[in-house]
Amino acid sequence: MINGNDVVNFLQKGSGILYLTSMPEKSTQNNKPTPNNTLTPVVIHTDNTITFRVFAPKAKKVMLGGGDIPDILRKGLMTKNDNGVWEVTAGPVEPGAYRYNFSIDGVSVIDPRRPDVSESNMNLWSLVYVPGRSYMDIQNVPHGAVSEVNYFSTALNRYRRMHIYTPPGYEKNNKSYPVFYLLHGAFDSDNSWSTVGRAGFILDNLIAEKKAAPMIVVMPAGHTGPFPSTDPSTKNVDDFVEDFNQDIKPFVETNFRTLNRREDRAIAGLSMGGAQTLNIAIPHLDQYAYIGVFSSGIFGITGENYFVHFTGKAWEENNEKYLNNNKLKKGLKVFWFATGKDDYLLQTSIATVDMLRKHKFNIFFKETGGAHTWNNWRDYLHQFAQLLFK
Image 1: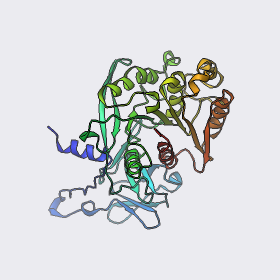
Image 2: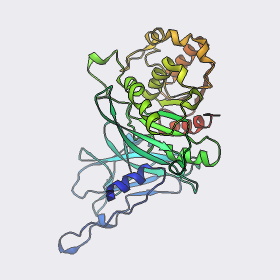
Image 3: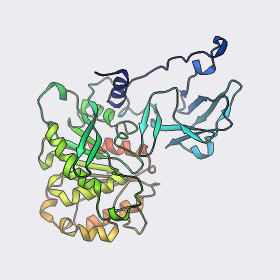
Image 4: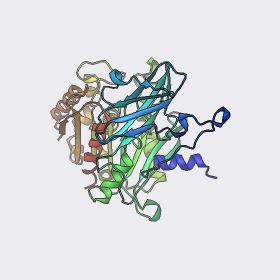
């Protein structure tokens, strides 16, 4: 039986969108309403500034927190008015999805008046979407679905979760589709690409415009334990790569109608997911015709210290036999990198591209504007998806 919460969760995570109005709370003593009964918690203004509000009459200090909202650390302090409502106006922001929460007297909470949320690796965020980019706005086009899928990982000996996008019409036909594996970053989860990343909307719009082939998009959970890991016994074993190769990919190809030739398979990821993409695809070049690396590369290649298993020169030496296999390179149709000019991993991306070119890979590298943010990663997905399965 499907309950109301299941319906809400499915609609929020699918490539459709659900707008909900919070039910009025019960009145206080003497049947007097509080300002919370009629509170409009988020207002998006015509100049793309956003006003955030929360009712906390007994609080002494309230801060707005968020990802990708400009200058949030300096301008996030909220002001309390006479009726116990705290508010602040942030931005202006670019069109896109933004995570936010409130710190109320030091306690982090999501917006109690809005149901739209996005999961990261360590916590839940409220989510607001600022329209204005047609490629990721909800449009009057056929929509696919994003499913929350549980599977048993034999590599990890426990149940795990992933999100899978199926294109419009998948449930009504018997066609098989190419597969695109899309990996998240270090502070995200398998839920992130389909919420703050707008992946379902982006694919819906591209497919409707015939700019992208209908495809299945698999968004797995890249973390297999606490991040960062403090267990030195796992340093030489990438548990996620084992889980991916041993369980995720076989599960998808067994339970979904997939085309399983090399030319029907793509993989890409952002930040940590970009490094994982290289760890999966390079040793299995015979299985992937399209590789994308967003704001990432081989961690440690420039000497920086990251929580990774193979870094810099060690990674190159460990994968040398694959890097020098010219026969496998001939079936690689797209090897695509993009990183923002203000991204702290720009030099990592550049050094990785240089190393791969040294091994005679045909790399497309694009240095864009922006930094290490979802504003860039949504753009990269939109661009990369158009190159697939041509």
